[in-house]
Length: 436
Image 1: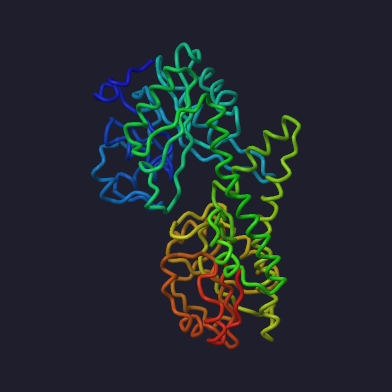
Image 2: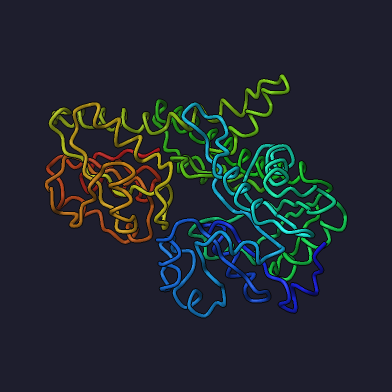
């Protein structure tokens, strides 16, 4: 097996395969201590990174330019490294089953250039057993090498939180696992060099894989509880935000908020464990119930919006709605699996003309992914009949209610999904106000 000292002294290289939200920050961190090759199959992505541009917003231009990462879209360069980290997306398909296409593709690519004594570490979120059952056979077949004799495999689940500048990769503890004690020790030493918060050695790869999926399942279920409570409180005429403030005064109350659950982690990972659970004959009722509730929220918000429009006396099928935000979460340009799009589509089903404004999202990406032309000027299609504050971008937080009023016809309707504004203040200023 490759020697840690050879990595530390630059005699051997590390290659990070996949330079997205996970792979790029990791490559940057590793490059401060090791020689790093950053590989991505997208030539456009490599060109951007070489020029100092990271469209994900996770890494600054200064960090890119000052790093010594050798960026490349030439897969043959993988053969130069003996410590390889795979960080590619693992989404679900249309029927919510695990989609391992990118993981398999990356494993095939790595396998073609895998050298004897190499270590391959996977960071992608998977169901328990996937690394050893799916990835290892591909590496063996493509390389002609034998697992645990000629090459070794580890797993260290990513914990990147896009847009979070506080909990950066170095500040979050890293779970590591390996196929042998020697592999585990090497992986722990490599990650330990960059992770200031420390590493946790899991007893085996399956344990580490499972730990990752339940991190996001726990969050998904807690948000689902808040969303269901918000629906109940709405029928009771009780302000959800005020209830949570009061309940939060108890020391052991877990503070979660209702809202749209999109992106490539929280709404995806539960389906990975559910898939494996069903394979072994157990129906994961709570996990799937949480998913059903959170998947229903965009449609619930759309229906509540329509109700407010009707109550105002305005016509639904000729209404103009301004949707503030299209990204899956605040302060990031990532639009993958955005539940705001589900809200957009449902509103259109009612015959509503929907306009979207988002200064953070990439216009071309939104057009390509969703067929939506983002407004360049928020006032371009004013006056609107209703404004929906869907994403709590930092850029939106300083907007005064009077500005929204200037964009709308009376009576003003504000659908404040995350409860940015105080209900009483909005109502005093003449708004028909609704929030989760």
